[in-house]
Image 1 (cartoon, rainbow, N blue to C red):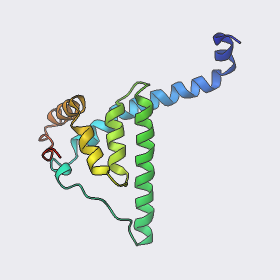
Image 2: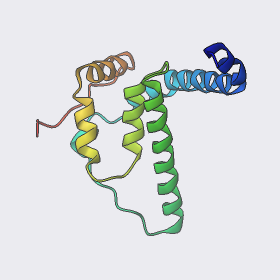
Image 3: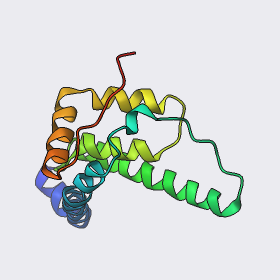
Image 4: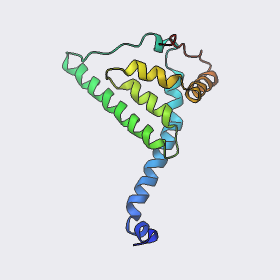
Length: 137
């Protein structure tokens, strides 16, 4: 079976993957800059581990927030291979998730030169102050 036969046999799957890729690309172009622009400048100085809430309504919100973070993290991983802002999308997804070591991972990602420059550029264009990062570990 040649590659052209495989493409013809999986035309619907490839069309769906193409549409999903385009949707993620456009969504990341629109949403990620807005989210990055509105992160408080001292966000990385006041990171703390969130505890699971006790009230049922807050638990649902907590679960939905983590679900959205997981979706953004997976979309960011896909965008490493597909068009889109992969690392920034992963950073936003990670910021919504709750897991041990989250703060260290976020700070490590933001300290990557390309990520730091992208964030600074987005915040500058939005008229926001640069992010303040804690001193090195």
